[in-house]
Length: 364
Image (cartoon, rainbow, N blue to C red):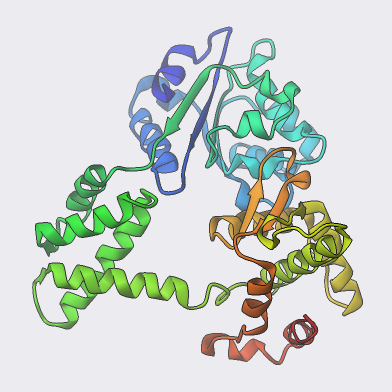
């Protein structure tokens, strides 16, 4: 679909856009990039201008217009509004849900470009959620999405096996070892990145044993070690504001629990992302800390959701998302109170921010 849209519609009076979706690790972004690389050798592809934007790297949704313009026209700096008026080419927008704002005008303008007179823009949007347009976008934005959609299914264990055999061809693996790694991942998430992580660890184990082949035993040990590492300390390595986000979410949900006249299951408690931001800013002001930007706050929310530390229920625009924890509030409280800075982060424990964080945690 992506290739045919670019080759057949480039320069036509009607230009289209594609919506590529699927679970994390299903190959969405890499597939789109590979198509673009192949097109660069085609006459039409060489004439097209390709650009990629990742929502996680933007300081604000509107910064997307400026980033896009600067990729093509480097001779001057311009505002987001002016950049929006001048652009006309093939755009890949990864993590597009991060461009959501309260009015949804940023996303609307992106999707509206291909429908403008004489436009030759092709927009390729990439997101983890298959039904994101229906669940998040309002009717105005949904009407611009068009019909060209690709849904990536999670990899099956057989597909994972084929990928691993190709990627690991420089080192010898027993067939059963690769089969174990692919089946373990295929039965749960289908995330090829985790399967590769298992195999990389198994390879390290084999090298440490001075053997030239990865055995089933090595693969089994690697899976146990990787999964144990994931379970060991889910908060380790998080930034100051990521931890403060979780504390703010905890305090917001505790307040929500206290306001209920009837008893409610702790795992069912939820509040809006906007409420969590208000609590986050309130804590920053109370302890004389620098407040976080809305864009960075959004990015943290998406990252924590991808780490399965929180759940964002996508029933509405991002700021009105319902947020809840995967476990009970009491369990979250224990997790936060037991947090300790890792050895590699000890040097930051004396900073004002982290001293304040310890004080906040001690009062949970």
